[in-house]
Length: 175
Image (cartoon, rainbow, N blue to C red):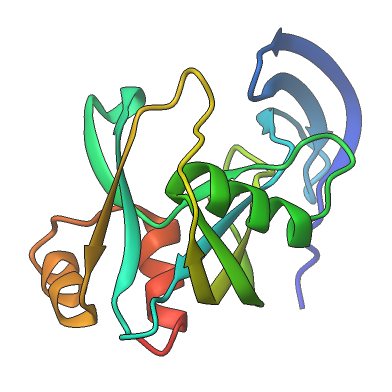
């Protein structure tokens, strides 16, 4: 079996943002040659499939600047420093949708774009939901929408839902 590992040589800090940090790293390839790797370092995130008692799914719709449009997604958000995914999922669900979960269960974790980012999203299922009130961050504008599984399947097949974490989460939630 061929060796595939790349060996780290050095890193140059490029950008420090609110959400992420960017580095330009130098590595040695398996063949001994050097290469540059641009890496986005991300604190990690959670996403959650909130299922109501009747089986309908709570979704969020928000404008996503990088794609210049609104996307229908499962609720999600980044981990705060030192925060566990198990805590973050409860916080994000409450903030974005106003629902509190009686039961959460981790479904999986996914690397969103391993070609250039280390972001890892922990995906959960949430049940036994109780409605309180939505309390988004001041820079978040989110509409809460509720759909049946059949409606969501149809939207995915028609290309109306394109967000990867949403498609993975729905697929793993006995969808």
